[in-house]
Image 1 (spheres, rainbow, N blue to C red):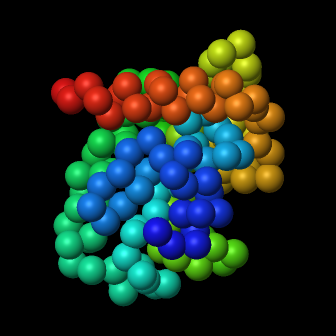
Image 2: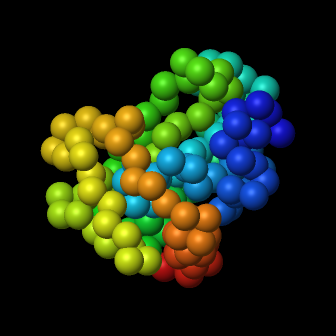
Amino acid sequence: MNQTMKTFGYPESCVREYDHWAVLLRPKQVTLGALILVCKDEARAFGDITPAAFGELATVVSDIERALKQGFEYDKINYLMLMMVDPDVHFHVIPRYAETPTFAQTSFPDAGWPGPPALGSPTETTTDTRRRIAESIVSGFDSRA
């Protein structure tokens, strides 16, 4: 486990784990279903991850998109690799919505639509709401198309 995984609440925030990647629920829900995809390799640059991690990434991305589409019917999806504060290889996975979705009696506006995601404008969520979001995502991972 690397520091970036810890920063984003691993293992409690983990919704799916692979050999080389962990999919974590993003604590600050910029949009409904926002995730962190963290490489478990000891790598600080994308080009430094192992060939096995690169190979597994195709499956992970496909699984994420299926799970989020099933759970929340996003319109677009953005993968942001910023690595400025948290240096281990990771992506912020931001589902995008043209219309504001509601989940667990909470509205999740996509403040940046149709431009870049507004990372500084997350929706305030309770622990219970985040748990329910995670359960919905896990359900999408568990149902293979």
